[in-house]
Image (tube, rainbow, N blue to C red; front, side, top):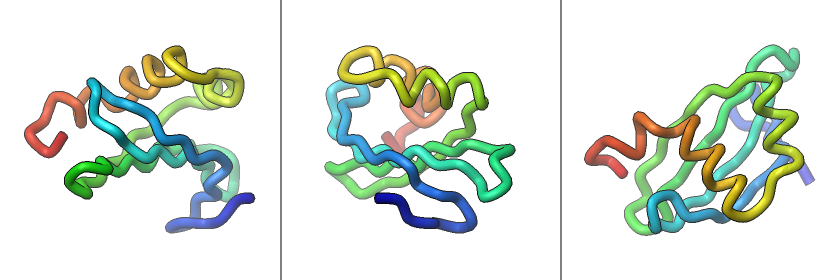
Length: 86
């Protein structure tokens, strides 16, 4: 099931840990297919962030699960993880 948020089609939703903190991560692609965005919600405090990723990373994300997926999401969201909002 997919839905649209701010012009981006959400094609996958995962609950993962980022540095041990539970987050809901939504993987999305813009309607024209040229831009990919992660929409991330901290499940403990409700803080939200987003991060861009490439078409190549999108191909990887579609295949990854578990710890491998968490590691790749952390790479994209490193600035968010290093802030106080995390």
